[in-house]
Image (tube, rainbow, N blue to C red):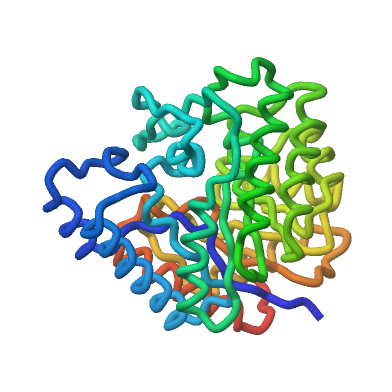
Length: 333
């Protein structure tokens, strides 16, 4: 019997009260203060906001609870942006949208940081199970960064993977790890590099006993990239059925996937809130077009991060996902 699990890829919007509090702190602008050593007042705001978003997920009934990544002003680049071996330089457009991040330039060996592990420790203290860790995948993190130390794309990717694996080893107990890999879609790796990307994901996944989900988004994977990703020793691959449902359906039809699957069915960037029944109907539409429809676990999630959304709409999206996972299978009209 298939287990439907409601979750998100994290990177939540700040609660409105937290935005107001942070804007009152002199000098706090996006990407300005988050360096890993914020002052006590800033730290207290983020701690209270973390508690709010964890309570919200519990109240909504989500099966997996994330820390929220509210401090990640640099989005997926955050784990490098706060690292001692990294210099943050100019402002760079975050993929093809109106968000920006500080360019992380790696200038020395990427040793252990512990920044994300510390966040998860705090989150674990607020949960009673169902904790989900969130990280950028190694390919996307290396794609967002600039290397001025390792000197070779392959060596740099391997170093980023080793860095992330070391961070994961320090995580508290967690049920699921989501590795977010939009760069696999946005700037797909060339021949040879696609296999190295899969090996890098393997290295990170091997650092945890939790179920590992690799979630690309903002489109569909190239067929060869998809094939190499299926070779990775992970539990599930995600498919963005908001940005490109036909191409992702084709990948599943032609090449299959892992024993578990993650379906990006709610729009993480659009304020229109999907009805729970519509989310389940979309899942059923996917399965109706597959030769094999038996999965051990189906993760129902937004297709992208949700920091794009107004907080009230974000709350409604979480509730819709949670309810969708509890509904019986339905047949689309």
